[in-house]
Length: 288
Image (cartoon, rainbow, N blue to C red; front, side, top):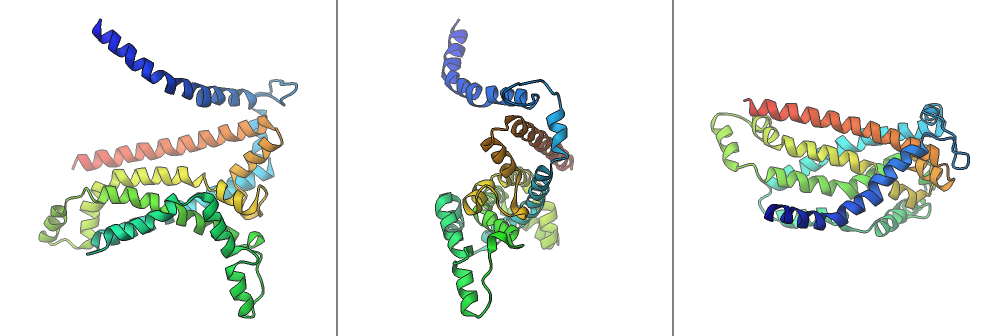
């Protein structure tokens, strides 16, 4: 009787959170699936997977998907490598570790509006770079409609989000005892051996967490692009979130829902593959 009463109390404390999840996540998730199976919001005729099939022949969706995939392929590995190298350098530093770590965390806490104001002052038509180019006798560049706009977004994203990966790597690498590296050195191992048999083995779980979070965070770049260039940027930086946001503004809920569900399924499969691979890697280390 005491156990049932205690479980009831636990459930009552969880009830507000469960209600919030149902109201703001589960119900909209199911509703969006219904929208993806109808022709429009007026007649609401059932069309099956027609909306999903139409996505593959939609030029805007294809361009947005291509840009989003390219952005992930560029930012995720680049961000992880830079974060690991910076973390390793901090680990070897004799002094000033906490100071440098604090400075690296500043971009993570800066509000997006402030950050965009800074980068706009740098890459605007009348910004710092164009001012310097003009004084040097060079032509002014419209960065928003230039082929370098993709590189600019990559730079802004890495500057904003690499700190998060550094924090995760720092927490993982700090848990590796120095005695393991000393033992590797006594056995005649070099830096490469220490990385292969010590760092990678004990940092593998953290690395997979960083990978997953980097992929998830890469889908949040829409906010920065939207604040910089609006809902219709140049073709090279038109992302999936732009496509879905514009469908929402046009009240094309069936196209928005089908695109969102397709992205959810693809992202879910990718994360599932990563989890399975991480499990195999972890099991192989435990069998050693």
